[in-house]
Image: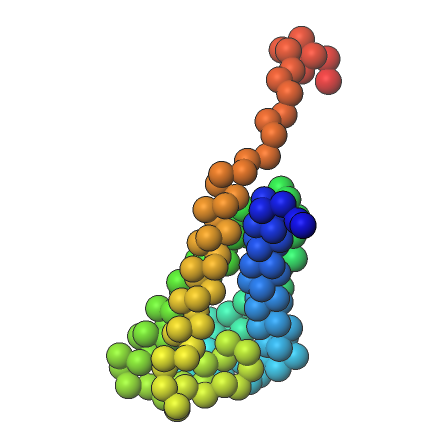
Length: 158
């Protein structure tokens, strides 16, 4: 029988895989359809048209990079913060569109419309945010080992 700590560790790995998978999938879908994603970003009416092109060009690559960095131990914590920040921004944009009565294409995973309601995309982002916050909480408690201190003489010789 597996030890409880080993099962718990696999739970964290699974959660990290889910978060990374969501960001990778979202980024890859948008990279394949930049024009459609640009139209979705423009539909939120939060940015001038010139900035929607920039967001549509770079956001998918940022999402793919975050997904990859979630697996690199030295980059993991930063990637978790970026993932959490993106999730908060996505939720804020959805809430803003909902409050203003817009029927927008979510743009999260391609051309998903919010015409059936905002509850599903907001709930999905909330779950993703909670999962990412859990990973952040976990990584805060498991720090990387400190680098060995070097003497000032050794540092000057290099």
